[in-house]
Image (cartoon, rainbow, N blue to C red; front, side, top):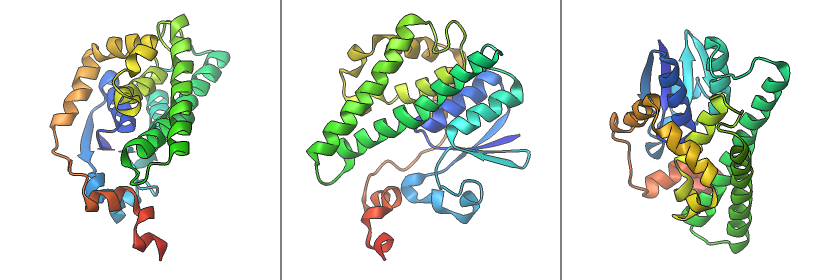
Length: 229
């Protein structure tokens, strides 16, 4: 059975969706990052980067959500779309677009807008602009296709769904009005039984929610004296 180390963030949730879509048996193991559990030696042995998600599949450790999606898709032979070489090139391109663009820019937009103790106008403007620009590229692709890869539901759509769950938190309550085609995909995936089961994972464990000094130290250690010594 796959051991799945998770939080409820966008990246772990897209892996949850794949596990449920593929019907793979798994044991969900919460990693409470606000409590610093990601720094436990046992977890760092699985993911040296100390982030979720990660899996252990028959003794094989895999970390980074997009690597996990590819690993599981190749393992099961599912959700990879058209098997042609050119189609796979497009799938890899869009999956990495989410990995290197949507995720990082959305995360930095949240950090500088909502978390940073000092409000740096330049940083806020830059990351909000780049976040919107990247989401607009997705929206344009979805204006032409039912799914990111055309008419076939793939791991790219799962990756987009994971981050779409946080879109209003990232860009504000009016974000959906800017990306109607992303919203259409989000709503369609949300209605899938696997997505409903994936969302139910949120009720299985009571994660720490207080964003206190402990949480700030564990999520942003660069701001502590310990990290500077």
